[in-house]
Image (cartoon, rainbow, N blue to C red):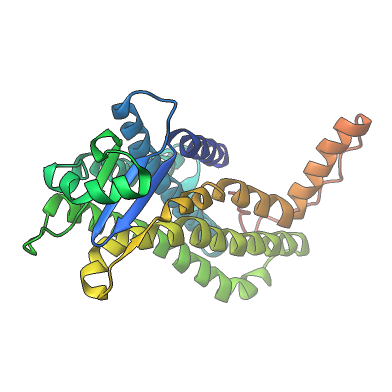
Length: 298
């Protein structure tokens, strides 16, 4: 699971560089487009942006599965065994389902139409000096001029926000439960296990902050503004596309937080770099561990 998540994170960061997603909120409109200039095919650039959006939710869903596993490792060893063997295939495969739904609905429900192009032509020309029809774009306009609902666009916005907050709520719930109950559980462990679980918990805190700062806060407001704009009483016009660069910072932050906080990983890194700099070194003495509780390394 660790290797798969690392691979997904690398692909996600690569897609961000390739697709170069950007967006603009204007009134109750949200236009989402690619700023890539070295890929000629507009359709391919659109596809890359949709795949990037799917990978975004894939990362969030995968993190929620990891929190489930850590929660069960700490409080219910029997359920933690559900992540072993062939059953782990289910848990590793689950995040791809909401990610595929999110990416596909983004691609099919947010295609531009004549009304969206007419509405955005002036603002796109003013801010980006390009004709709107030349821009590889997705457009979300939940309300028509007469106040009626544009069901395809609003379906994506609502389902997308629900998808994000459902998985984020799992991260918060498991994180808070572990925070308030870990002290009692650590009393049941050996000293080595207690120290290791303490380090894992500190890493967990950092990894809980990571999704909030890098994944949820940059994206959720962008999707929520078109829904709330008619009720805000002000005309919204902002370019939050730079926030997607923050999203791309999550994979390295997540890995570095774990490696720097958990001493066992730090020792291995120092050992490996020491070998590279000064030749082979003596392997560190391993600590005996009790089998009372499974140790989460995901």
